[in-house]
Image: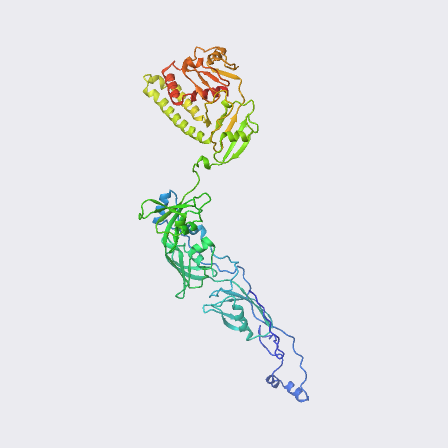
Length: 619
């Protein structure tokens, strides 16, 4: 802050530069005593009837010696604060961390790590008007006009005074920085008139304060002169494991100046209670109050210190409120001190009035990962194939398949509803779990076969063991399709209209196939034109019949609707349907191991192994 003041020149007084002194106050007219000491002057005065005119000397302002400016900022370096490790968790923090399976600390603990403690004011910070000067602080004075000085560096001594040359001592210790210009200006005006004064801060010496109570590192600290209560607390490592974040008392001269709640600063950005420190201040960190843990679907899981009369809802607000996916209608409360049995459900309305108690754990539940009833699910359905308008459509919950087909413009004349493929994510997940369990059982049985067989020596051959691993590995690579299989008649003209759809269902309506495929142990595997009235055996015969290695008793048919027909030799007499895939497997009774492998896979998977084989051949 620089303020300039002007004083009018006096008509009877002028300032002359004295040759013997650097800065003297002198009169421009000789005094009577000076004339009496000069004989020639007395003779000149006697010989004239009037006092001759005296030409005044030119004006020369007084110059006060200045001190050469120094480099540096406005803040003298404070005594470095030794870095301390973060305080270990207290008993409640450890208890809750064990409950939730992850570290959970008190709110604000992240500010107390060594890398986060440099909260001192930078040297370029503007000095507020309320700052009171302390011993060791430095002021820069500039004077122009009848008295001149530049870069006059004046340090406040231990008694709170500065010494201005040709003016004397001026007491500025404890004076507000906003008032110090007026204090100095009044003292200079007692000696000089008509001047301009500039006062700017030089270096601030720093202050010493005392941090006591439940601090991580109690003691005396030398801080920057512009430091606040929060700066001192963080310099001392913050509250200890048993210290309070919500009651930090500042005492000055035995009087309570402020009782600061760090939550106001951390949660609201309110610094109204963060008072500026003065030299000799004492800070007392009170013991921690009642603490509760807030976990679950909140914006900041932590342990919070609750004040008298604060409720469960207040504790949740300290945690940043509930998250976007939280169930805001209720809370779950657990008493870690054993005053109540188990978890208790508290409604949102009750949480507004129920007082938070020491040692409680408050959990906010999440709405994610919950399977909703079909009547509550909005669905996105993809329909393609033989429909008038294939595409993706959104529907309200509970939509039937008939509504989807109608939205897609209905089926075309070439549609073959019998072979329609409807896949569903929930079915795919169920199939995957069942399939993985079955593969594990197959692996166990196949691995144990060499141990339990009478031909143990033969079966433990490396080639057989490698084959077991190969079979299991191939089974693991199979991915369930999630297909829903419906037993529609082959001549059906509509899909299962009453089926309630789920989100992400896919529907494919193929055109009517015109072939029947025959593969496996036959001389001529191929696809043959379907003809009405032909049997499965007729198409096997068309492929050349069953080879010697083939197993007539294990022939199976994969229908176009996804079902598998496998009832031994009788399958040859069954009528063939459009789109059938007929597979003749190799006879597996040529060795105990192979027979056992066939029995195991046939029992666990039924037609799955055969279907996978057909898929591999057709691909």
